[in-house]
Length: 438
Image (cartoon, rainbow, N blue to C red; front, top):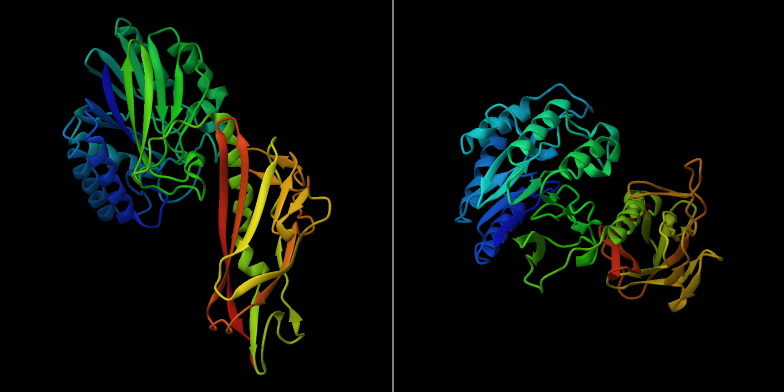
């Protein structure tokens, strides 16, 4: 058998120092797993940073990976090579060139291009470059541009033919380009002609396994320090590293959580697509504070929260971006987490579903309140307008008056039982408590 450590993304976070601390934690964990080699599936640095910082970050991350004590190989991600200015199909390859120059000092096979191959213990490894078209994305961007170029495809065909007698072939890349099947189908048809056992990618910042197709196992690993979902650990809410074992022409995956909890298993794509749709819906709550202003009157100090001081309009919290975008029942639970604050008269819109716990919980049937849903977009009406609020409640002061400048903290959790068991996604919502002027 051959044991391969796999490391996921560090980027998409506001705290790269914390991300590199997680990377080091992951490296320490993998170094105890008797691995033979390691693969990093990309997004190691932030291309939007100034060049000097980019170089420093690359060297920091590479220095951490050196502590693995085994050979490691890297394929670049979008955060590594995309130019700072967003433009699908951009011709600005300055960051790509910078990445290649830095990695080529360690691995000379990337002097000319960022796709390459190598052999290790009788297994042939292929690093595909998923960013021939810059600022394209197989999941969240211009999907149909996210594919390998004709030049890379021709190279791949020659490389596979030259290594037809390898005991196994493993492909690793950053973006799961198979989400754009119109671009990937020719690649899959090529791969299935050879002893390819698996294709591994990152990018999504959560793990998932798909259906084995023609004997090829397509797998996505989660982040190792990069931004993750506010979710249960099997729904993408945890950092991890992976050990992939190839034995007797079969792949086995062990997911090792960085928080020290028990090992994880890959979550099936059927469930992670559902999680992603729910998460996309909850992303629409980014303007919660704007839609729910809170004011406290100090003259007189009546311990009442208002949305409009001049009209003495008492506050009423509203949540509109709520529904069930998936094909299974979903339970919504709402709770206030702020000290000395509670909810009065919480209620879901009549007809939403089965309401529980005095208006703070509701079970929604499949598709409730949702007109359009997929893994990257959820709409409540066909024209994109918003319906009436799904939930309302009056914020109630239950103790000493909140300190002006404090905030109300509302927690929203959506849970369902999927093919792999219970999964949940949540959001922490905040709105500041301001003071009415005299």
